[in-house]
Amino acid sequence: MNDSSQKKIMDSFIKLMERESENDEEKQWLMQKSSHDTITDMIKGMTTLMLHVLDGIGRFEPVNGITISRQLNIPKGSVSKITRKLMAKKLIRAEFLPNNKKEVLYHTTLLGQELFNLHQELHKEMEKNFGQFLQKYSESELLVISAFLQDLAGTTFVTLEK
View 1 (cartoon, one colour):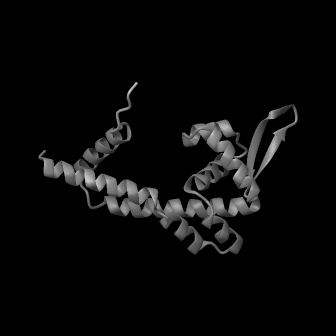
View 2 (cartoon, rainbow, N blue to C red):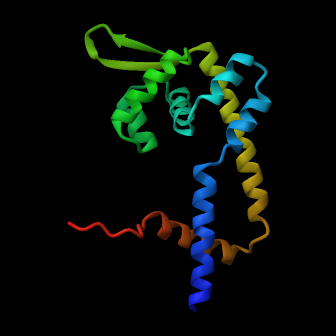
View 3 (cartoon, rainbow, N blue to C red):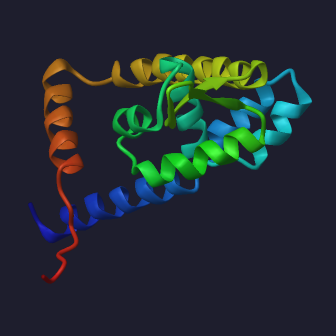
């Protein structure tokens, strides 16, 4: 591969990462599809990670923070911060087990369940559109793309000194 091709791939990769980090399309879609003004206002102040933690609670409830942390591959401390914010927004509630004051199980509230369902619709829409997008590639091209993405996901391009 020549330097020009490598530069084009690197530039495309950087554009993709920048687009992903500042992409509000998902939040815009959720706000457009919401029939509840309270939820629309809440979405504006939520991060993507908050939506994913709510989604994890909705999928696995009743669920504890450790399970959410493992399922979403995020630190337990982040889950604790986010669940406090979601409780403040009245999207989830915490249940303490009677014999164990440390164990907390999270449940969605009616409002949280509504946003969870809306988020599930978004993911169905994305899966459908992604499937349509992939149809322009042959099976052999998809195998190469898949291998590339798996390698990319397991690689870092930053070397830290020990």
